[in-house]
Length: 167
Image 1 (cartoon, one colour):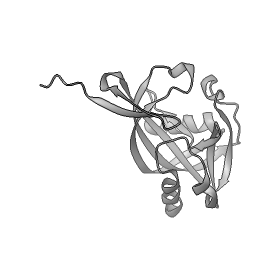
Image 2 (cartoon, helix red, strand yellow; image 1 turned 90 degrees about the vertical axis):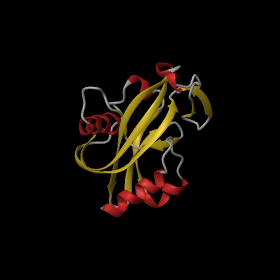
Image 3 (cartoon, one colour; image 1 turned 135 degrees about the vertical axis):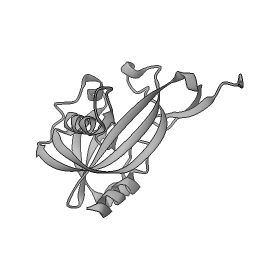
């Protein structure tokens, strides 16, 4: 067995990279929804950009339960999952709020195509931490996605195009 410590390259929300020993990382599965209606997609407003509604899966939740909970929390919209459309790994430093200072995550991110089954747009369900950086979700014209600033590590435009092709 080697005594060499494994070093992992990770990024923060602004794309700044750093290197840390693997022992600093926690495993964090997460799930995100892609909701498209007509020629628009619903995105969570974060800082001066966007992300897909979603987040961490709690230890007592199924993937689908977490997806439904996170979507309502971030948008007010109730959804049902249709199918998974993308998965990816990201080594991430969520140092954007005091709650996560000094944490590092090995994120497994699962993206689902979803359909709306109820609810109305609101930001009233955001938790205290999310209220620090998130705002009212927005319906965005899909033709404008290439010009948007996203706060995630996936090729958001490709995920949206794949979702659109499945509808």
